[in-house]
Length: 278
Image 1 (cartoon, rainbow, N blue to C red):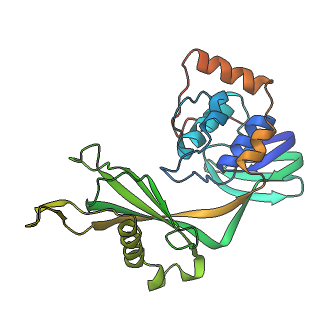
Image 2 (image 1 turned 30 degrees about the vertical axis):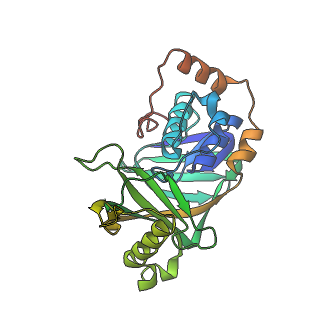
Image 3 (image 1 turned 180 degrees about the vertical axis):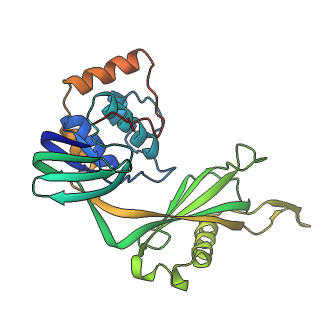
């Protein structure tokens, strides 16, 4: 079976920025690769996203999910959920599906939004904090280094942990050709993470008092849980630049206002995969 579709303009992307640009411009988007943001990274300027129904803290991954839902509801996501192969032709995308169908998407103008890096990747090393999990910090940065550039502390999700205890994720930007080197390993990440925590005055679990009545502490102890590697990319426009283009009218804008007024929004990650989208 063959299906042909035509769009005046179409966005090719899969990042948070590309989805936001599709929302504010109301240009259809073809998600060629899901570039879902890191799980616990947050949006800094929360007030900028009140138009999407947010009032408090926003995680970037949840915002990615919400945008896919809103764009799907307005028919702006052009993607089947059974892609097997994509081929670029002049002014068109030819898609083969798992049921042996062929879909051709023709366009006048294509906006390639995400430039994916082949030279480096974003690496997130997750650690369980066994000693030193109670402190005031949410993040610690080393702005002068790409290796363990930032530590993210978050309420532990492990069974049996109390709400005041935090585990940690170490973020590094590592060159692709050095990813398997020992100097890029989880062991090296662990050593630098410990050093950064100690320099901020974080201490391990209390261990009684000495003869002078001074509180003693065990050493900080962290254990590697797993490593997550996410592709590094450069978007065509930053979030700030896209928000400056935002308009307050149009079908997508009106649909969003109606959804939040009636509290009917759903943010399931898979909600945008509509089988009959095309």
